[in-house]
Amino acid sequence: MRKSMAGVLGLGVATAAIVGIWRAYSARTRSAAGDQDWDSAPFPFPPVPRPVNVRPIHAPRETEPWTEPVDGMCPVSHPIKAKLTSGIYHMPGGMNYDRTRPDRCYVDAEAADRDGLRAAKL
Image 1 (cartoon, rainbow, N blue to C red):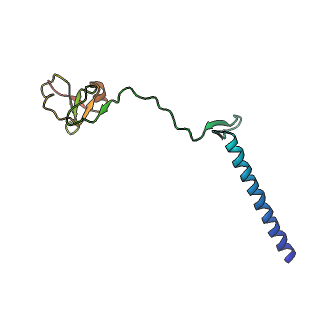
Image 2 (cartoon, helix red, strand yellow; image 1 turned 60 degrees about the vertical axis):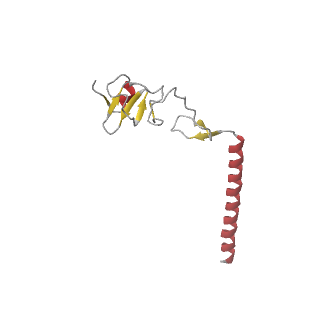
Image 3 (tube, helix red, strand yellow; image 1 turned 90 degrees about the horizontal axis):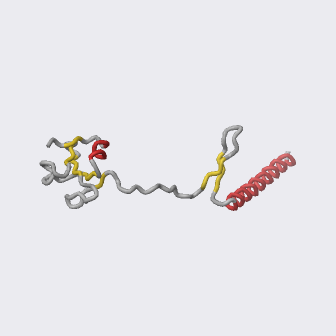
């Protein structure tokens, strides 16, 4: 019985050593591979490399569709004034444009329409 227990214990130690060596080898080869990791794919397609630890590059938008007003005024780039409580937007030259304190400022009327607002009656 002692002989079989010693054999099982020896087998466990040997297995742990092999697993440790394998993990160290895998970590070394992964870091040597650079900034790529391999995803498995369904048969018959080969695995596809993908970048690791690379931040996605987003194309900068020239202008956002809306912005917050600054001191109750819309910037020149976003002249459309919108009140979210009423769901109405005011365009420059409109009857209540000058006295409206906006919640949001839009680039154009289409951007305000896409957000579910409607134009003020003239």
